[in-house]
Image (tube, rainbow, N blue to C red; front, side):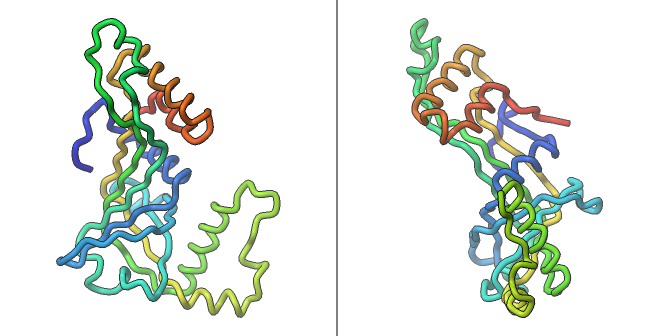
Amino acid sequence: MGYNPDHDRVDAVDVLAEFVGAHPLATLITHDRVTPQADLVPLLAVDDAEAPSGKALVGHVARANPLWEDGKHVGTSLATFGGGEHYISPTWYPSKAEHHRVVPTWNYLVVHAWGPLVVHDDPKWVRGVVARLTGAMEAGRDNPWRMGQAPGDYIDDMLTKIVGISLPIERFEGRFKVSSHRTDSDRLGARDGVVRESEGHAHDELAEAMTNPPRREE
């Protein structure tokens, strides 16, 4: 990513992969040498011993989407994953009462992954990644849906309408902007403000990260 100061940067691969698992809907940015394009695509982070990071992203796109065609994903592609975010008011910092040397900011959690987009137009590979995605998305549900619940010919037909993709991750980086450069009292004061404004629901993940800033490096 662009600007990412040391106090916000997260490089620990396990932390980043866990974040992707919690927020699998990626903004996948590709380039055709003329214009960048952005597509929303659910992606999973999986082990890949051949990728520089040890991880790859896998998923699929509609066959009608030109993203997978030759010349539509030139060079390095970028997948971004977003989590909790919230405006931070200076009034939430206890230090404001001491010196008023505080300004507004915005806290957020985001992970970026870079790598070459690889196309998998193979029925067996596509079926496998659909099963894997479905298993991950349905996990924990009382009555999880499985591919086997649908008629076989219907699934076979639907699989012809999609194309598999993977992104061996060459660079994996997060920016968890959680006021970690401020004093503990200011950081926790901002955390309390986020919780109050979200009634403790919409930004639980951000509040937790502000309480216990994540490990940055392995």
